Amino acid sequence: MAATPHKKSPARRKSTSASRFSWAKILIWGFVLLFTAGVVLHYRDALLYYFSFKSKHSLKEDKVAEARIFQIFQKYPDYCVGVDVSEYQGNIDWEAVDSLEGRPIRFVFVRATCGHDRKDAQFEANWNGAKKYIRGAYHYYRPDENSLEQARKFIATVALQPGDLPPVLDIEQLPENQSMERLKIGLQKWLDAVEKHYRRKPIIYSGQRYYEDFLKEEFTDYTFWVANYNFFAETLQPEWLFWQFSEKGRVEGIPEKVDVNLYNGTPKMLDYLVHP
Image (cartoon, rainbow, N blue to C red; front, top):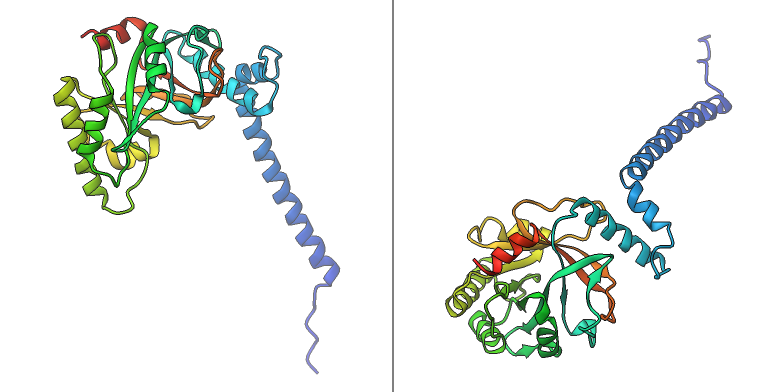
């Protein structure tokens, strides 16, 4: 009669599985702790700021945003700080606007137009109010509308003066009724028409992903203003003229949160940009 094969008991199999599971948990938690320790060490100044009572805003979301702004400002102490505004910021008291987290505001971008037929409701008030700063006007481009009509709307709305920043084309949306290639042709038509009128090459604004996927290689003759709000993104790329790194700035005189920007250079360099 053949010998009956030896079988492991269910208890032993369970014990082995539990042991492997315990080691896996230890390794995972060890990795998490090491990663957390590295983050805390790297962002120690911003985290100290986060847990301080320096800010008058007590909401957690505001504290995190202020920690990021503090971190970037500390890394670029000599670079110019600016904001961009539109009707979404409400009625701004420009006499009260002065600084952001202790850094003087050097420049202001103001939304002028949207698409082929719409002017920002607060454009005149913001454009006139921001005249004590280096100011610039931007157009929010709608991908499925005629590009030359959009250019004409911007030109009819904005009268740039010596000392103002170059005009800005803001492109963020993907087209629904045309291809990306057709969109790029339309963008170029807007850029050409606006440059011909103002005799200044426009700046292009977009988010980092959009910039890298669709604009960086095709519009090499232009400078870029790029948005990236990721908390762990802390480097202003050398090819960016401006970096919009937060959308949650708090400024005295501005009722709503505002986008925070850095110019890739010093005040003297910014002055040269508007007085070439």
